[in-house]
Length: 265
Image 1 (cartoon, rainbow, N blue to C red):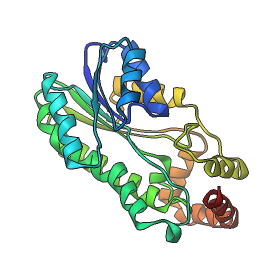
Image 2: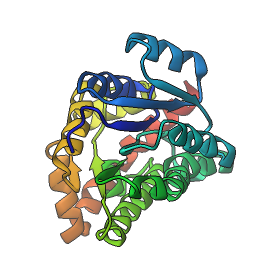
Image 3: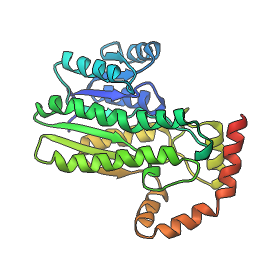
């Protein structure tokens, strides 16, 4: 899709990746509908972009919030694309996580984008070409200890994207998926950064991830996995899951240690 002149909804617009993605889409000539739940941050971001875009302060995890977003899109005469970027992450052993936190992670990372897409499909169908781009995670394809609920939410988003892309194959809507690896943003607690260092895991910059999202929109590439050797692990885990399991289980003591440190910090 050629981005210039397109109307694009971006959820999670003020996050570490979201702000940089907003800047890049703005530079490409898109009109943006910027959404998150913090009004002041949205206004600050829009001012940084010249004040020419639409801001929607809404809680995407609620029905009312999603309706507010949909109505804003309708008021703009529809949209050509939606980038589902909003998400939360918590690193801890599953049995220690509060049920309310698990439910919130599943709601924001999975239920919200699914239901938002459901509401937006009729709007997107009216365009000659349209895109739904869901931002997942490498962890959606590699079940990682310490991130059980997060992996679950992103795996659901991955499968949703795949199924929806096939169901909408005879419509103008392309449904795309991109899976970053660890990214250096405030989404990661110190314990996550320390764990990545201890395990020798590399992180990508939010600028790089934002550029790859823009490239996915431009190229209509259906699936994209970021990071080496992480994207190799995706293939290995699909074919030989026992090998990846053995590797991760061997690091379980380290993962538990940093999860405990995160709990006390």
